[in-house]
Length: 290
Image (cartoon, rainbow, N blue to C red):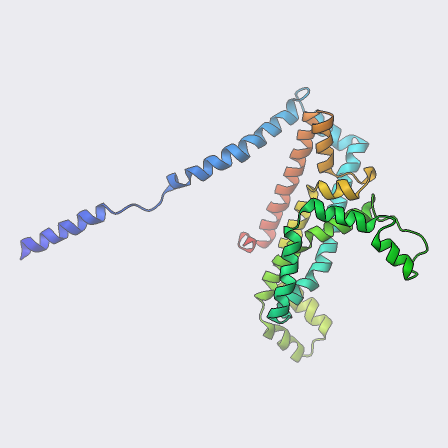
């Protein structure tokens, strides 16, 4: 009996030793090589070219930050991104709240409309706004028909057109994170606040708004970062006085063949994005990125 038990024990140990080990670091090597060759290496080449072309040094960065024309482009980029982010949050918050409180049948239709706007080709959407906002477009004709103005309002080739077009494109990227966050809140919290005597404005500013801040941060960061690097919409709806950094990079690389200055501008854009991401993680927490 003892010999049989010993044999069974040895067989069980041998079987356990043949079991596959848990996935280790070697299983992450494909992802590591993917990120290394498609992210780290191109960025390293970008940084190297920005400090060596046409001559070694930080001349490209100094020119970008000190030249009045380039400084104006940098200012326009951050200004437009900030305005679009604020307007998108102001418009997107009510839409996200409606998606939460409306009946499921109605909210599904609204959700489908937002998705459809995202799936439509970007150039087609931007060109549609170009047609709507021009001096003889539908919007100007409607404004003159109802007596708001007696002459066409310039709505394209300026900051107004860029803001309208980019806000329309960015709105879903604010609505979805906000809707996800608001859907996790317990409605009983607002009911308790109202029963305790809080006015509707107090319920919003002291209860609902603080609880939805992670969604606001996530949506706002996403829109701001995307707006910083947008190219098509500002190029089609904006004018030369509203050039943004992505347009400047395209002109420097494709037209002027100034790879050093274009690389420096691209690296500045990347650095700002990484800094904003780090600040968000530090203030909100990595877990809120889900």
